[in-house]
Length: 554
Image (cartoon, rainbow, N blue to C red):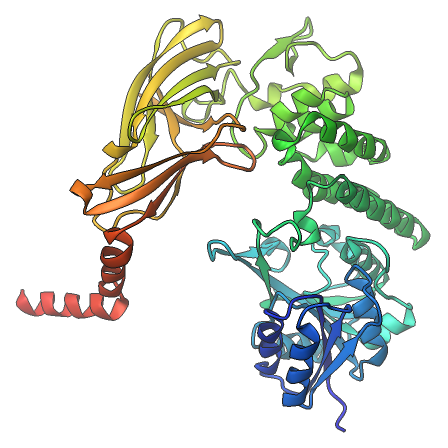
């Protein structure tokens, strides 16, 4: 048999439905001299049958079945490495794909210059809505060869093993294999590969298609989507400690601050965004696992974070778990604290107490948020729904409390409005916010969703109402935080006298920061007739023909 240029391993476990798609993406590669190893982690569904059928259809496909389930990705990858015949190796998960030129481009980069591995861009596709994005785009923006990870430690953020093509000789010379018996094995394997490689080449082309399913059932969710499990936290921290030990043993201790920053900015940040949705018992277990590890991290890693993230970290380290949950609702969004407290030095701290030690005072000092000086359109307020009462039809009455810790709003009642735009015509509902005490206002507003003016084809999607304030001709729009535990409210609205009916659901957002979320879903004639017709008419060829006719008639 001809020696293949590249061996691509497809790891699979109980994924008979998606395995053919993954293998088809390999058979469609523009570089055809490849070997495909389907490495089955002892599946109990129809995967063995499907895999054998695929292998029977193309001589390049080999089927490997592990004698027992390993419970992870490492063992099936390592067993495939043992039997791989090519000088270059790649890895693919059964629920993902390779773009058609992935093998060609990464192999060309190897042949252009002898390096230990090559890597490219990862295209992420949301399964629920089809949205596409690039994973860590700033790291793969240009074609370049990196002479060791020390020259660009930012690459520690790109810890996927599947976006790379490895020289077999490089893996064998360092006896580098995937660590078995642990989760988050990619992070340790990639850190080791980065540190051991003398040089690696980056290309900006997409070489991997990563399908993201944020709402997958718990039983089938990826490890990264199982953050609700305390064991998941423990697994992630365990891998970080292994990476720390390797950095020291391999002579790369100087990368520690960069690696710690990556952990805080990426790994910890993923859990922090979920904190508003965790109960007290979970938070206590999280702090018990996380805080001892946080104490080992380099101080410089904390100072490189945005203030809002530093606040959440410090509140967690101080054991102020309810406050940490509260602060986490402002991560990544211009949401103010409910309260701030000053001291004699002129510092302003998050919360209602002055921190008791130097580290806490440093981390909780929010003067750099400029709560009292930021231009009004970009000011930080906090708008919370304290009560949500369904009314007849599709009406809701919202009790809203606004916190203004920077005291930007003048004393007295404030004119405000809710703004909602499920179509090009914006829906604006005015109401009044009355002062309760300095920096705190309350008001009530009745929202009738039947009054929204939808386009002819209706609307299928989600909108988040904004609260709008105007001062001296300047407008500020801020997000509206919902109670996180209210029962979703559903109603049917017969827009246009029943010609375009919709089902409307009002619910909490379900993820950080927990905005009020309103979902429209066309039903009846809207879904069966109007939208299909308009989509057909809106096709590019039809639109171009209409423009041509219009130009002739002129």
